[in-house]
Length: 148
Figure 1 (cartoon, rainbow, N blue to C red):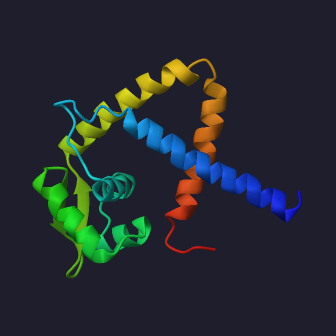
Figure 2 (tube, rainbow, N blue to C red; figure 1 turned 30 degrees about the vertical axis):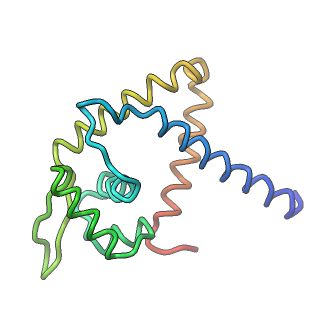
């Protein structure tokens, strides 16, 4: 495939990921009393905390590609909302862990997302699994400590 074609295909994928993410988020049950509302930075930080429990704030900043000061602000807010706990780690380090409230919050969100997508994609679960695998690999590579 010529480079221009590959670039167009990859750019189309990125564009679709961003738009579909926005559309799914617009249908997220954030108004539910069972959901703790988070801003975009808090959501990004929470995603890394969920994927890498025990991560240090510096690792969270690196994986989210956010400035350390923004991560610190988000961590304070998340701690205030009961979504994370911090514990001393080796040396002067801090380990960040999701709380049970965070796990419950994520369960409610995932239930809402599943209901929303079931009506659109529920009859094509093989394709959904393939797409999920591809996007999972993409996320892992984009949040890796070192970029190739």
